[in-house]
Length: 219
Image (cartoon, rainbow, N blue to C red):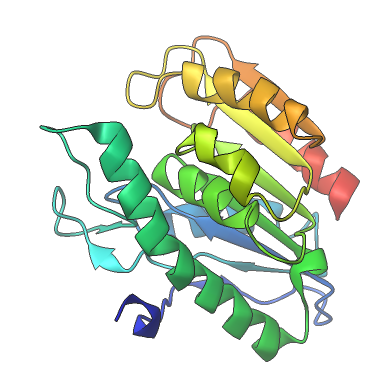
């Protein structure tokens, strides 16, 4: 069963020795936790009371055997349907990981920011907006809302959301975040969008600075 899958990956303990918050980083398709824990290394000195953790996705990536995937990419069929099926399968695995993390650390949803890049950003939004107890915030780098038409019926929490996207992203086009913004605002979520000009499928410097400022506000 999917629920029995246990995620693991790199973790940076709070630099101060006293953890008051958590930032969970979900990597993109074909990558791994070591990739996104670099964000934690970048932020650690600025947020010394925060634990940073970047779990590896549950499956070895079909497109890159050295990396992992939250769900497989359907390059032939209906990508929207395959994303929905994949996201619904991956969500309980992330739910379980978060529950274990909160038990281990004594922290909870209100102390946690869930951030992701690309497929990880899709999962951060898909998971974070359906948790019974609201997170502190969600950051989506180069993502989109999977099955936005289902979100209104399924949304359970409304944490603040920051969307960051490059305007020349040819992997997950910027329309993903541009379409997500009004949807989130319509649902009463404090959402904002930052577009990095001249940036492709990556986290540009101005996007990183915007995310850092967002963390300062919420941590």
